[in-house]
Length: 458
Image (cartoon, rainbow, N blue to C red; front, side, top):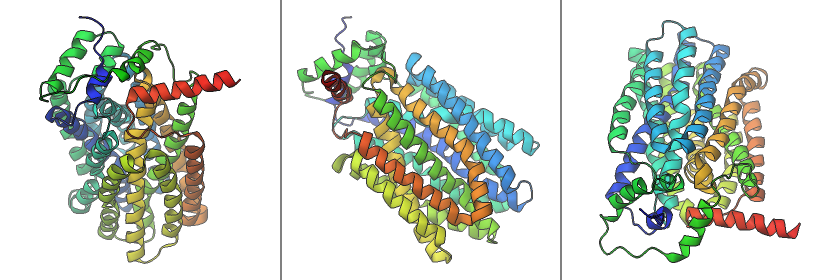
């Protein structure tokens, strides 16, 4: 077969098809339980503290060990995802994560729980990063922001789901039940992905696997009658991509993207997991019962639903850059009010708003902005390295949060978060560019043209 597969332009002209939806649901299934596993940490740790199985200091070790595994898993994804493919990486990630989480459920001691948590993290670190990056390469160009946010919406339903399950099951069955629920379904989804998930034709074309890319593209095109011809204007952009397969994330023109992605991913994940992992423990330490703590957590986590729904609208209508900058400042301010709240109504309402805004950030940054900015040849590397830095931040931050909470209370914790959110907003405004409704090939061309212009001016 000739080399003119043109995966990017052929995918960009497609509407949303049932083949798109099957991929969306397969990726969402793996991502949902990946997120579920991460979001059970707050409830599980609170239960451990209440049962004297753990303490605030020990909880910091649990959180850090989780994110240490996530860090290593993310770095593995950076190498494997671009070299061996998106599908291959997802398959091993789900299997490792499922097995590791089941082992957490049967761990005989807190020490073994830490060990198994690191092992599970090796898979957890890859599932969502690779899933979002892969979906960006399939989603229709004109509505990519909407559909990437739709994937984030489905994945982040895990937040209220984890809180709801914890509310009803932990008081009755203990914290181990949460790991069983988080560990068994991924094994089933892994089997479905092995059978039904295709490889990204954009990646296949980059690797010169033209026949395989053509077979995948035909699966979509045969579902669309009277398909419009490929837009010839896209072809030069694609050839430019193919000519630069040796690009790295530190190459001129891409370096700025890498630096910005690292900064905003690190700040976003550090502040977010500070909130979700520690808030139930804060409630317990303030004297709230298990049931009241988990009820508060459930109401607060319901903010994920409108948050992800709003991100689907904002990403394509207002664009990524200014939505992210505004929401960063907004969350910093809401966090300060939340840190001062004392009544149950204020705690739940402000927490709900914080989670809603946080999910807008997560949906746009992780699902859209960071993956679509990097070229196809280094997309998994770019996304994974940014996430690796964020995981490193979440390894260290629990100890800082524990120190701040012990010495300054939750006020100190949220002032720290406020400062980070302001830095994030400034970074986006200074280094960010808009990607709304642009094809992935055009985004790469745009960034390269910016570099070329800068080079000529030197």
